[in-house]
Image (cartoon, rainbow, N blue to C red; front, side, top):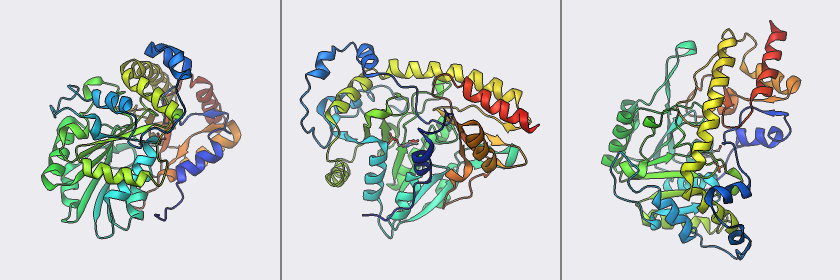
Length: 389
Ligand SMILES: Cc1ncc(COP(=O)(O)O)c(C=O)c1O
């Protein structure tokens, strides 16, 4: 087993996610009930009630893998070959896939490039394998002139003969950043040419603010691409705990599957059934979430415009989270701590995104736009700020 550090964000959530009055930093999308999902899918509840509660295959049920594979055919501007069910491997959430895939891909003596800031598993697992890991900052500039960017030249400069993996997450948590198509295709071509796995966390794909900016999945535009997705984020169903990896390298998927024999063995059957319905109806679920995101973006834009002396705000290009800058003299850590303890509003200060690979801007905090009705939480923030003036 790997020796892993504390997962700062998850440890913080373990303490506060269900204790704070206002969760204003959720990374998931507005969820639905089991009944609503069955209704969206047009499925008779008897199908769920009649399901036998036996084990399901470690790889994931055929139905789930067929549904996932079906989402790729013809959906890409990259024009890659269709994905087959055998190119898909199911997991208990995206987190299990991150752990097992990155620990299979990397060993001492190997090298990886990982974008920063990141969902901590993407850097802590590679570091724990004993591989050398280089951080690729997703920004240029600092303070109010900071810009999010994917600099492919910098990736190229970071590559070594021992580089096995380039790991990225777009749309990005926590920044909401989506690179442009040219940069994405250049990165895909670079990884393919060097035989490097482009490990691509695409859990927020499909809910971009401008649908024209939806990037083709790594597995469609890069022969060595590996796409990670899950029901948790763009489909709004984190409680199902069903994720999947998609790759053309079936031998590699087989080795990752062998690792899963030591963890969850297989997913919960009812979850895989519901996940299959969700994937088949991904368009409708994403449209629901996009409507929430569009309404919330207007609300957040207005809130931040009204409080421009306190914040630099940029709505996400895609996904459910943003990483605005706090301008107050007390600093973002104090701001978030007081907001939580005095007003019950949960945000994630920059320290929870601290990286061992690069210095993440210390004046930022993560905020979530994916859940309905953020107004009461924003009213608490406004009242808190008014009391500081
Ligand atoms: C970018 C990213 N990847 C992976 C995960 C893990 O997802 P899950 O909770 O579905 O395992 C998260 C969760 O927040 C995330 O934000």
